Length: 497
Image (cartoon, rainbow, N blue to C red; front, top):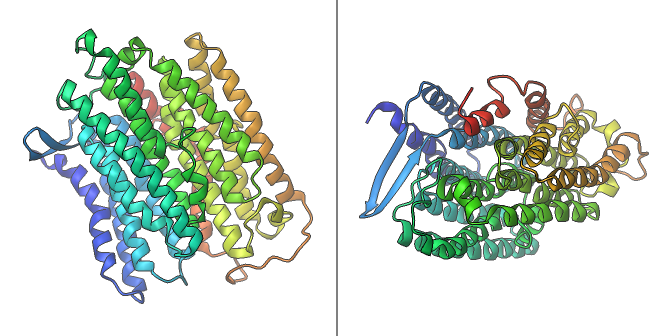
């Protein structure tokens, strides 16, 4: 085994070791906790960059450990896992910086950052899982590590939201477990392979494979917030802003969507999935979720809940792109894994800034906020326009590829769904932008904390939002660059740089 085969384990350790360390730190150990947090996040980025370099050179990177006979934990670095682990590593660093500033005066910071790092560890485990058993293990661990973050505030609403979140995710996990066991009883050990591995089974098993497919989709669909499995997500918005950002952009909903992509392409295979008649019903379900989430967002005055229903809609673009047969739609779905992440985390960072600085929690309270916090509002504007799909922002390219993929495959209703969704996106985002920039302040703002006069808010809250807003623009403007997510998504699908 060469040194680079240890990279997946080392990347996992850069958040796992800090998590254990942080749990034993006292609350007043601010500098040590900050150094451990940031040190682990920076080291993870460095190791991910090394991993990219090795994969680009054609090295096969696999780490395996046999837990028991016929049960192997396997990590691998394939192009799809690299896309997800890169997103997780980059946004973890930015969210850590944001959380350090956001929780500066809060209690139980060691507990928060310990579970925060554990959450990233489980997400990285999901990203680099090389077989279905490893994915299942880390997928279940993700529910347990994010639950303490959802209930962090410890009040009645947080505890109720935590129980709802746990009930949904444990139900999904149980269904997923049964589906994985049943599938392995038919096909043996399920390693991920780009062409799928089940097409060689006899035709007599096809009905069982169809039932198992929908069990896997249900299990992953809970975290991906597919309708009607989405109920936990708006409720979980009682969590602190860094947790909301993590749930929506990096960890939970992305883990569910990523799992569905793995099932379609690396377990069943896209051709075999089409043979079984599974893709069109899944595409319809994703389309219903896209429209439903957008419609519900229209009626939310609470800013974070409006963003939550927007996430329910936007994450299903990933699933829609994967379920439309053809390379263009798949490229759009895969790249939206990254594009939605940077745009949505920008919006949640900005929502947290409004809440902490001015005490703004509702859309109806945002009148004139752009004149008081112009930099934060500018970042929010870029994120919102990207979600609508305005060129040249990143969201436009995701929608363009998915829509063109639908046309390429003769599914002309797919661009129609995207047009309806974009109109609804504009209907719930543009009024926020208008009232924020041009509305007249009609009440006093009462923030939670005061900040230095030279900044509109704390620099540790402002800088991450500016970086992710800039990425929302740059990923679109430089979409043809060899370093862009779209370029890498083309390589995943077409095998060419």
